[in-house]
Length: 278
Image (tube, rainbow, N blue to C red; front, top):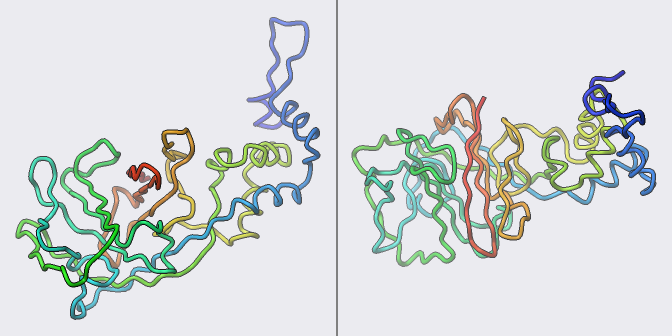
């Protein structure tokens, strides 16, 4: 008997009648939908493909003139007149991590022209409710209204790193597939009871290629410690705004080789933050 069947296929010892195992239930439900093969699995998964933009972080370099108007890690962020350097609730300066201007290749929401991310390495927040992180959104920018703000002296001066945008396609990871198509997860379990993730992984690689941990805009998150996509007020999955990997060139290390995940709800403009590491 397979490992998964041992877990899901136990009978009720107090009953004379055998109870239907999870696998039997899955098989019956899928048969009713005529879903039986790996081709059926591929047809379920294919409509879920989302476009994403991989962020390749270039080695550190000298900032060009007026670098505040570029997408980059480190360096100097874009500010407008009247703004101040962001701080925590305790008044400590937040460190500037990166900024991205919305361009056709960026996969950012249409109502955002610029996003910036700030972080407090001492506070080291892990979750939305923690202090010490900020996603700053500009719906509109005015290049004529820019202002240079000197980085606070209590912050290190991270090196300037340019961003190279690479278009890619994205699919949910194994732990997240049930959030988007439960039948795809059930069919994967039926096709291989011992390693239900195996067929799904092969389909993903066939459709979009190998999905590694990476910095990206849009698409689906690739979780380290398990599925944690937040829900909007209607109970739907919020869309990934960006995820940022531990990046050597930008001198970023989120815990033990972790990633940060930021989600955005277009309707309410709510932003959620999560950090996971090994």
